[in-house]
Length: 386
Image (cartoon, rainbow, N blue to C red; front, top):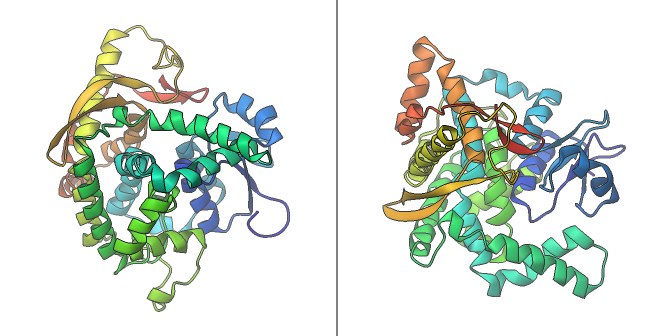
């Protein structure tokens, strides 16, 4: 638990979970009293999982009985209950950056996050397998922890090809991630957080991949500490709930004034969307093909006939930093992308121009042309037709 007394939030997750790191970062940075529990906790099995109808983590439970799953939905509710005063000062650029960062945190860094976890098992295996095993069965004999951990590890490692992680693409994944770390390290040499002197929802979203996998597993942790120490310090800053940062002792704890978009952050996003924009555009085309093939799907129907909460929509070949990369189109990120695109669509006048100009500046202008035939939602823990 963070703080003393009864928890305000019960977080069901695991240290090795990417999306748990996102929610935990919010709770720590905002000073919310919480208690973290493993999926092996009896309350998760008895009440939480049946309530959300999903085995996915994280899930949260509030004292009033509300139980939620999916990190974006959870943060929506947490922001409603624990509003951030600094967010009120955001203009269209900063709001858009924050919303796009959640899309980036969901999928934009999936390739390095999964590659550096599962393709470096001689370094990572003992740590990662133990982490998964303990989250499912602790306390238990060591051999049972190993069995449970290996079961999850085998399943997760099997996802690499569908994410476009193959022997042919590994060199570009490693090169692009190295460039990404360098650009972020430059940003954090000037700012303690993404948008200035205070954390925002964008920081929490990026803590998923940049801490949950890349800032915690042994191999990528060493890589980050060695080549991008200021990125690592940012993960410490958020996890520690630091109210003052010694590197920026005279910096007020507030976002940059005048709706500023830091040039260093813009440069990092431009690099990232050079390998991510194509993924989103082609995934949207696959989603529209699904809508065309299922014109009579009633509202609330799942996109996957099998009820998968993050269904694959078919193969696409994306331009990943200049390399043609076959992978699966995944629908969940399109649901998240609806949020910033809806927000831009709802603007008018100068604010709309500013937002669209920023999209083009970061290399995401093609996303403005995405038009899904129907809207997406989540029903009973799964991606569905709205």
